[in-house]
Length: 486
Ligand SMILES: NC(=O)c1ccc[n+]([C@@H]2O[C@H](COP(=O)([O-])OP(=O)(O)OC[C@H]3O[C@@H](n4cnc5c(N)ncnc54)[C@H](O)[C@@H]3O)[C@@H](O)[C@H]2O)c1
Ligand SMILES: O=P(O)(O)OC[C@@H](O)[C@@H](O)[C@H](O)[C@H](O)CO
Image (cartoon, rainbow, N blue to C red; front, side, top):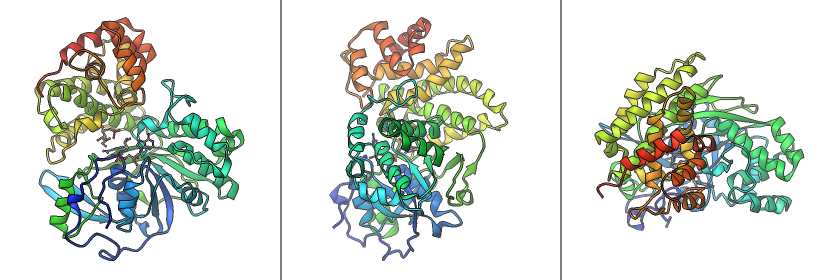
């Protein structure tokens, strides 16, 4: 029997949800397998609700199969393999659910299977590599450069030096290892499409991959620069972790057991910018948009949507809320979001001058409606993870722009203040948080008062930590987010 689990980084779906009805498979729901031409790293909930959905809805879907690799554990690959790669997308709107079986993932593989990854990336038919490995997995320093000291990098460089026998453990190390095989096979160029919530995500992916290659084999790094196109994207579809209740709702509505359904909001958006030297699916048939200048779209989404999410994640939990919808219903949280949005919107106008019609007021209205969709239980605990990486993109650019414009930046500072307050427990000491900089956070929290705030700020932005007015502002605002309620 297939062990029922969600994404490998998610909460396992319990054994209680195991089948009493037939299990989803290509026998139960016949669906031809397209040839693998896309390799995905980071088989989680979002890949299934977004890129795999767009690929299924491309006009030429029959030519574009996905081989999706997990990140840190094999669970999601084992679960999905037991269903021949099929799973259900539950589109959860205010009015109810709709259910769709997605079949574009034709192979689900344990990320540790270096042999399969190498074989697929070295195959001439592979044209696209997509990534959803989380923001923290790129491991760049606060200066945006490759960081040899980032988690796992030294060990991966050692593995890479073992050549084809090496077994790097980070997704970037694994990709570099496999690209070496593509170079050796003479399989030619391909596109790497970063789908993580990062500004300039194509550049971030390129810096991480080329940096790792350069540190191992400069000749490979030069080949990557010459042959690999790093495509930037803005990706959007709110997709919380799957729960046992979601599995049960699919069973009740569809009459089959699906161990890997994914629940997402009806809204979806994909903006891409960059070259696809070996071709790509016709994602535009499914609504994807290709642009020359992606920055305005990225900033709109990262600042307004993700920025509000992070603000709600910290302020909301401090005020006793569990989900985005609950936090937004709290007038204190809503006011903080609106204040931050006013600042962010003012700093998006420069981007609009580049010709993008961002329609920010309508975007804000739409976001409020999306966040209020209480049928999507988007837990603040999930959004709060890896705060230092996220705030560098969600709060720091707006606060920096405000300070450069001679203003206080109190709206963006409030997001950082909520994070600062969240990092401290009820006794005033640092609490355990999941963050790539957890050691630095712990060390900073051992300090007191303004010194603590300055040290935490330095993890996000050294220049902001040297601005006394910002330190004082964040320190003052953090007090206002003192823990309340449950
Ligand atoms: N969930 C959403 O609503 C959403 C929307 C837009 C963008 N995204 C982007 O997609 C990413 C993944 O979201 P998800 O909901 O699929 O999460 P998830 O937890 O379901 O899956 C994340 C995948 O990345 C792997 N991973 C995580 N950290 C890693 C690390 N340090 N090293 C190697 N592999 C690692 C996991 O093992 C898993 O395969 C987000 O971090 C975000 O950047 C998510
Ligand atoms: O996925 P993360 O962890 O980068 O961020 C949490 C949320 O802000 C994010 O998942 C949004 O829901 C998503 O970006 C909406 O498209």
